[in-house]
Amino acid sequence: MKRIIFILSVFLVVLLIVWMVGRFNRSSGGGVERNGYQASTRNTEIVIYDIDDLEAQVAQIIPKGGFDYISGGAETENVLRRNILAFDAVDIYPRVLTGVDTPDVRTSILGTNIALPVIVAPAAAHGLAHISAESGTARGAAAAGTIMCVSNYASSTLAEIAAAGDGAPQWFQLYLSKDDAFNRQIVKRAEDLGYSAIILTVDAPIGGKRVRDVRNNFKFPLAMPNVAKKSGKTKGQGIGAIFAAGQNVLSPYDIMRVKSMTRLPVIVKGIQHPDDADLAINAGADAIWVSNHGGRQLDGAPASFEVLADVAARVNKRVPIIFDSGIRRGQHIFKAIASGADVVAIGRPVIYGLALGGWRGVVSVFDYLKQDLQRVMWLAGAQTIGEIKNTTLRRRCIPVQCDEL
Image (cartoon, rainbow, N blue to C red; front, top):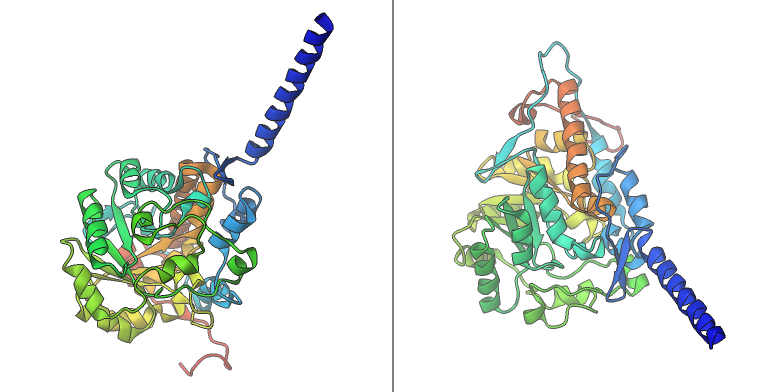
């Protein structure tokens, strides 16, 4: 009998060890398995030597399908790369004897004061990166003193994200549904929860060809609760199928229609041509968002930064301009603002910070960019964001690539 008890005890100990090893293997990379998907559970400040380092670090801790969805772009990913490289086409003049002392990076957009001219771009499915999903991002954005923009394809509910922000400013991004009643319902829900602007995304009537997702046969492992009731099953669907469930034909009338749904300012996101900026403003847009969707839609298009100055010239300060796609450094922020943007937005760096450190990692990303921007401003002789706007950049010209100046 004692021998049987001993054997059973050994067996139970072995089972316990196997269970603990399995749990350690799932969590040692900061991950937790949920619905078969292992997202990060890390909760720590992160040390950033160079923001470009974050992507490779995240690739080690979340599944390949989720990582490729976050990091990838359309087709050859040429536009994805150009979004960053395009900033090298202009230079910032170093200035001396300017009397600048600890530059002030505070600014405002649409009446909202923020601690730096960098906000969180709307992006789907933060739950692919971290178990806290958009709720974690919202907490980090609030702690950084900036605006959280929330996709209706979020992994968290609008209510959860609003609660995590604890009163900090948040904007809601709308992809129009074919059902106008649903559009009105979700806009009203965002308004009732305290979101202070509506972002109407107009550059994704269909999804771009995202080759990495096709190769991976990537399907969302987590639900998108804000649209699941209308769009049906979102978990287990690819992004193409989710976009296909939305409204695929858009016109200036749709801007007017969204304006009729809400008392909030309506920002039109996805502008890449001066004529489209005119169309949006004439239809009632309260702000223009210059973006090529982070290089995820039309490959062969220009980088966002390459079109910013032309769009800004046409807008001519009639409405504020938000800019995204490729922001990774303080010099990028400086160059975008000097080229006509009022604020910039970041997507992938925020999600990478979330994966590597939860909400504290998000704060670390904003702290890094704030300090980097201050350093650039100091060396360029700009004391305030307003002074950046009055800065002239030097265009770098290669004879066979540039028009005659």
